[in-house]
Image 1: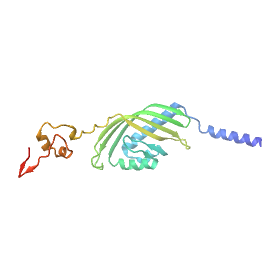
Image 2 (image 1 turned 60 degrees about the vertical axis):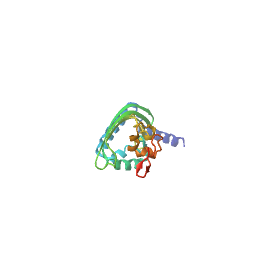
Image 3 (image 1 turned 180 degrees about the vertical axis):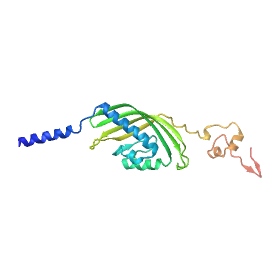
Image 4 (image 1 turned 90 degrees about the horizontal axis):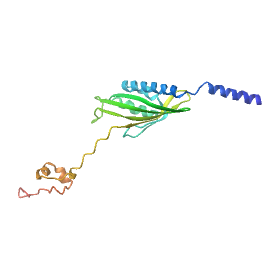
Length: 201
């Protein structure tokens, strides 16, 4: 019995030794290679290849949008998005922390989107830049895949346009040219009623 237990223990150690732990430098090199592949695949529209970089239970959290939950949701979104135009990413890894089968990458990104004929109505070309965190996990097959992808834009959102009623009128003609102001009950804009064909004053 003791010999069987010892044999099993040795077998387990042998199995663990077949998948050695990787140090920070090795993991960073793997992540940077994945990022280089991702940049190329986003630009060329190779979405199945992009999806292979994500774990089955991955979350991708684009700025100002609902999260994409699961590898298939990520695949579905980007299969549509690449029809809208060209996505040109630049990814720069700044730091990687590693603990066993888990790694956290911090970096900076730049995005240039060029709208094409398939873009939804009103969607124009744009540029974005910011920072990101990616949670990587070493899967049972030995591959490192993204579990959480969270970019955070540095570009400020456009300021909301003020309501017309927030700008007091200094000229009667301004109210005449802006019927929306009267509809918003601007106190500076009295409705001009017509009596016997003549406007009231």
